[in-house]
Amino acid sequence: MKKSIAPLMLLTLLSAGVVYHSQAAQTSPVTQSSAVTVKLNINDATQSQLESVPGIGPAKAAAIIEYRNAIGSFTSVTELTNVTGIGEKTLRKLSQYLTV
Image (tube, rainbow, N blue to C red):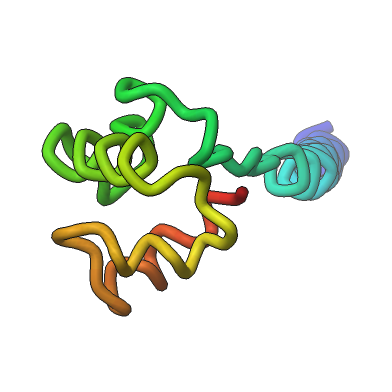
């Protein structure tokens, strides 16, 4: 009787591992593909919306709005380099989050 229990236990453990593995494989791609990044329009964004972007704090958000109010709407995201405190390196980090 002991000999017949061991293969049954092994089979149970193996099938549990297969079920766990297949469930993990099914949920991983869904989690990754469901992460959608919506770009923020710098011509319409409020101070708090701009601050929600990684790399933009209160001072940069205020500078973006000040530039926008003084000069008018941005024609491209690259125009952000005209804003005090935003250079090419910062623009590369921000551009994935912003649009016009």
